[in-house]
Image (cartoon, rainbow, N blue to C red; front, side, top):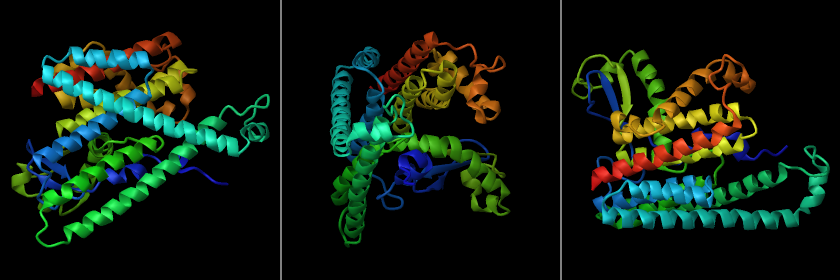
Length: 382
């Protein structure tokens, strides 16, 4: 039996295009082991030019907004844009954001049309109607899962094509870096193009974050630091490996990853999109829909706090309700709900009281939090 990777693999496989380890940097508090993620294609100790870094951040922000756009209808998208724009007070920032919105919408439409055209061609070639009737999932002669399965197949093929292009770019970059006396600035345009294609490719991948910030925040910042702390504390020579100066103390008490504000912005945006997707995809079971969205809501709230600070995040309408959903989801996943999704319908679950009427309310709160947190951050930069 053939299994599509999009139905089998998860973020820890797909996200390897953004993860290249890291180096220890000075901690911000006693006992903190702080790690700065390594940038692919940038030589050790170096960095992109200021112009190059801004372009990379802008590219990633746009792709993170593609995640939002693909999970919104046109009215929601207009509302989201207006909420964010209303939070800005700089004409130049307003102009820049409108341009980014336009590019994100264009990339979304190109993605949507690409998948739709190729699915139509596939279904025509496969005699779709006949294959539906023969499917074990057919109900009254129609397989309601067939179209979604074909979309996954088409998306996976496009992802594979883009990955091959990225591989060629990587080889080209390594060849150029081997040339003596070639300035890093000469390689930077190709490096930025490769980074953009990585995000484009991951947009086609199933159940995955596309941008560097969302990947690092989830895999390193949330999942990774707990695992890394355990590894370091269990190593007999762990303290020796971490210099006293960098630790600002003796024993390793915590691990933090040194992510930029722009990375947290990317994570904020993508988790808005994934929250909306989860609510819509599971709308037939409201309690489960909110519970399932909870893990993305938890990351959304965490990204908001990292981006604009706890006080500012908590001041945004709906933050408290979302924060509770996120925390409850994490707790219940470790319990009965982690083994049986129907557990969220039982009276003892914090999600048992949610109904279909609550889904648009939760959705709107997530949109507002994402838009206003982004606006507050951008306003602080003006």
